[in-house]
Structures are given as C-alpha cells and as structure tokens.
Length: 158
Image (cartoon, rainbow, N blue to C red):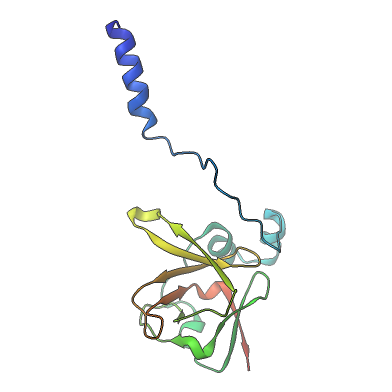
C-alpha cells in the first residue's frame, strides 16, 4: 500500500467515527394520535411546541403547576390523555412538577443520551409528546422522580 492510499483510508476511518450512527433495525414508534408539524404548531404555543415536539425543557420554577397541590388529574396537553394523579405528586424542590408514578399505561420511555449523560425520557403513550425525565431519586414506594415540564400538562380539578 502506498502512502497516499494509507493516509486516505485511515483518514476516512478516523472521520467516520465522528459521524452519528444510523438507527439500523430500530423500531419506529407509531402513536395512536399523529399530527403534522403544521397541525401541532396550530394548537401549541411556541414554548409548548419546543418542549413537547422537540424535547426541549421549560425553565425551572416557571410553571404554575409546580406549586399546585389541588386534587385532580394531570392530562397531556397534546391529546388530553390522563397521565398523573395529584395523589402521586410531591414537591421535589427542582422547580418542575414531580410525581412518583404515572397512571397505568399513560407514558412511554426511551433512553436519552443528550448532554453527555444517560437519562430516561418520558412521553405521552398516545401522542408521543415529550413530558420530561425520570430519575432514581424520588420518594418511596417507587423511588422514582418523574420530573415533568408543566407546559406539557393540563390540570383538571377533581
């Protein structure tokens, strides 16, 4: 092998390590409720769209739902699916509404590897709207903290 081929081949190998891997063989989740980008933008505010459809995060301590402890159910703002009961809500001190468990079948999860860490992302099981993340530092009996963006939720009083 001559020097030019050697440099070319090893340069390609080196550079290819910086190209994201393709999701070969990954199952694409199809949700019961689907909308086009345009339809989502018509029904959501800019912040709601950023959080719910682009997996963004609202600023801590900006959601009025963080300090709301009335009896009721928290629904998905995208499709109105009941997600969390106020019976499972607690004050985590993080600045986001926090729950120690979701209603049965209400959420889906996936691994989130953004920001150089591995977290568990949670989303609405019916429309796929991003809700927040689940951490292992919550209260018993689950030991989980569902740290949820308030803009993804709609509260309905009991």
